[in-house]
Length: 257
Image (cartoon, rainbow, N blue to C red; front, side):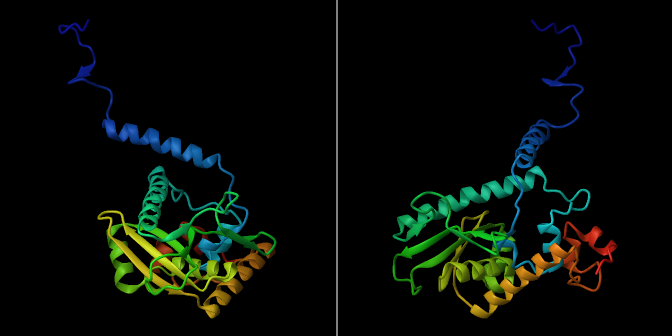
């Protein structure tokens, strides 16, 4: 029984020694669990098609060779939560499209995602889905389906400018997928995580862009094999993409050819 005349160490039901709010302490536990779970997963041993559209080929060499990111730039638990929530939004979009009559396939008959690999398995990609039929929306079927869940500002920019201008990495991802899977077009779906608005865009296959991206991927692999760094994409470290790059400090301190 609680003795109200005795100093129990409680302040309004909270231990006096607990400086951090309850939410912060719980979130720290959740994030630590997610990071620990991530660390048990086998790292990629290939160049993912989803990354080939990255504007900086030098960064891709760092990623492919599993070069450690700058201190403090590791993925935190919050970022891992964002990634996982994206899968939930994707499942919702799949259900909505199917309910509207789109024959969207997300797994092969034997199980597993649709995808491809080339260069002896050193370049691989796994797609969100393929629409093999559906309502007449002036898109030829079958078509690649790619989904992204975006925060409101990013979604608005994509809806305003289109995926090629606003999200060149996603655009490149789709071009590579279409090239290696023999598809002539794609349906890009972006979900606004704040409002659940949906933006859809028809993305035709562009062979010249796909070839340039494929050549870039080969260049990255060759540089990685030779232990070389490709040229930086910018002349100064304060370039906006460099400021957000997790390899920025390392990159601008290394002068290897």
